Image (cartoon, rainbow, N blue to C red; front, side):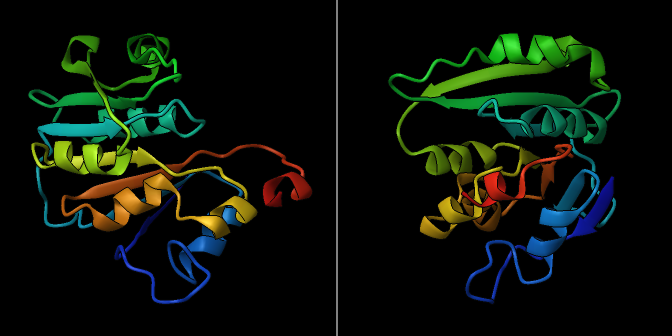
Length: 178
């Protein structure tokens, strides 16, 4: 695993996270964890994990369970449901509970309905000490059309934030860019 700091801004056109971070995340042969505003020996009693069910969601949940205070910390798995989208958050958490570093009774699930995922997550984040989310696996072509939701949340969140991307194994070069 590669753990690195990230200032939360990008100044170079054509990059979502930054001219240095984007290539590292793309070619790293291991999982990557980027930390924004996490220094200073803070304690994280309430950790929010926005989950959409993607391949990085389970790593985000695991990282949150490690960073939450051991004796008092709680993790809230959070999803924004929209019409036509079927995702069972509690089942997802239960499927990954064995790998988590805190007891299952300190992991809460919260689902809200809405269309504005970014707004809902940022509003919910105000009540937490930290946000941990998975980075997207959208292709480079799709990312050119719009900034992915996790990156928009990461850039606009004022709380300490961790964004992670799990190692994905071998992927076709063409598939990653189309």
